[in-house]
Image (tube, rainbow, N blue to C red; front, side, top):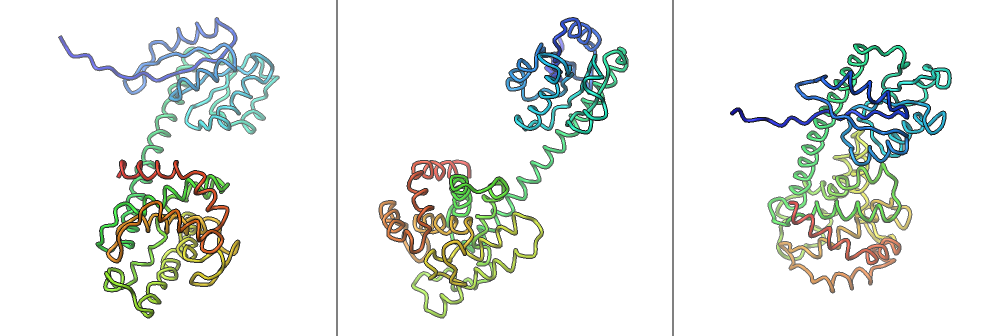
Length: 351
């Protein structure tokens, strides 16, 4: 007996208040196969029911939508919901209408993110099959591109984390400092109201805060004892070096990383370096990283110090509220300290 291989079918959703349309569509398409995979039909008889089906089946490949259902624009409002509320740009949306005058093809195509528009009377059995195959081919190509982009993103992330760790440690074992700084900084950035573009880049940008240490001599970076004034002056240059390394990129993430590298040792009261910036002269993302970097650095064993206990760290951060650290960010940090400690555990488990 030959071993049967289970092949996952493509999910096709039919959204129409006419039960006969569902029956005819399924009859025409039921034997259709694309890339060796058959079809699974999901039925919805109103736009509201379709929303439930979409939430239960986020991998629906194609939706065949009527326009007039609960009201004259139910189908078009469903398109907007799918694209703008559900943020689903993968599903292929095909409008099939029996009332073309209520939803003219030109205006619908221009105003709505649909992939095809057909009158029900023009869709013969063969043309319906062709439309669905074309939509499946488009859906499959889009998913492959997204998967490829995801792999590229993972590779870029891995490279950036590796470079950041090399810059931070230069052979000294500091665990996952840059990953923890990135994850915690992104969390606090969301709590502090940073916009979506900043949140998109915060994790990686924050992880590169010490990239300028790649230009600092190992004998100073890994010195086990206290630094001389001259040596500390050299160390402080890493902010400028990091900014110089990153500033010429047109990639928004690296632009943010350049700013953070430059400003993460500025103090809220203006006593930091390299430029003695104070308060809102320091960008919000840099003020966030300034606190997170100190928090995690104090909790990490280095060649020149032992790790501090959390009670000691928390006491120091409270003392530096309004001096070294932004008061609002400090308060936000302590308000969500349990979440932050969970993030630390998650990073350690992940990496």
